[in-house]
Length: 408
Picture 1 (cartoon, rainbow, N blue to C red):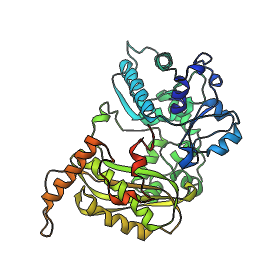
Picture 2 (cartoon, rainbow, N blue to C red; picture 1 turned 180 degrees about the vertical axis):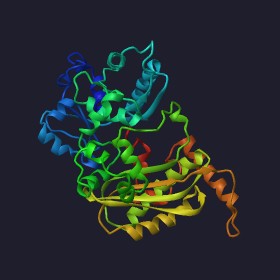
Picture 3 (tube, rainbow, N blue to C red; picture 1 turned 135 degrees about the vertical axis):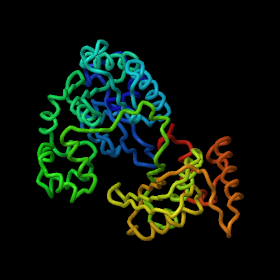
Picture 4 (cartoon, rainbow, N blue to C red; picture 1 turned 90 degrees about the vertical axis):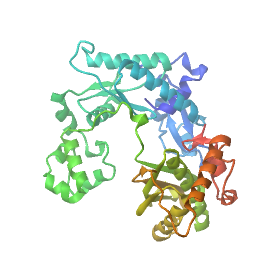
């Protein structure tokens, strides 16, 4: 979906609908969806194509965005509406293509056989989907067609700059199209792209494809093989049309703070709140985790760290994991102002057995957490909270009325 949050806001505002056209991005008003201006200085979460053309970009501060586009229309996010719209759009996709996999709130993979009697012209098929989504939701989308998921993702990026919003890279065209693209366009590399440029002298994906596999393995380990396969347009991952029911491999929660936190006690309060949420989600699925992770992002949303520790046995109880997180904090935090905190728990296993302890009443502790989880599920996340969440650093009350970190 194109500029999904902003597109939903434009599409659901009657004053904007009459003048909009599918093939004319400029028919949209200059609109931006921003975070809470009072607590987060109005970070731009999404911007309409018209606003982007005037210099507004995602993650830009509201004041900077307004200077770039004085007529910018700013609205606060409505995450519940976006989630509901996403589910309806993905159901529309499944009506045309039953084999589909949800990838994110605004992305979806789908597959169909070609050549076949039902899909004689893939470009026309994709255009029909695009038109159907516009007719039903007044939201634009782009479609990238390719022989595998990774290549389709790359084609989708290229379709962003194609009028009509659809690109089809056949098997014969795939290598030619890929190898001409810059390394920085290679989806999934993140910081590895800069290493390929600086240490290997690669400028294009074609340059990466010509690197010996041994050199890539030496520098990136198992990732070296993945990088070479991608550079050759290969991807063996299958499409999971039951992705929403697939058990999670891990759980994580992250929050951006209303200001920079410099005191250890303040950061510790937030860590505990996030840990309680992660453990509650893990218990809900009757799982335990064996690796606990802590991430901090520093002031200005730049710098920070993520570190994890693997435990001798899995658990889903905060009192066992909290001291480990504090140890990671004390070991790796350099004292910089903290603007965002994340906590994760993975290497999950089923909660099929109970490890007893000579010095603790484990069944009683488990019953305590079951009671807490039941109260939260029945009466809300703030029906019972830790006393520490009442301190100025506590974020529990604010997070309880948000979805995905934003107001519903």
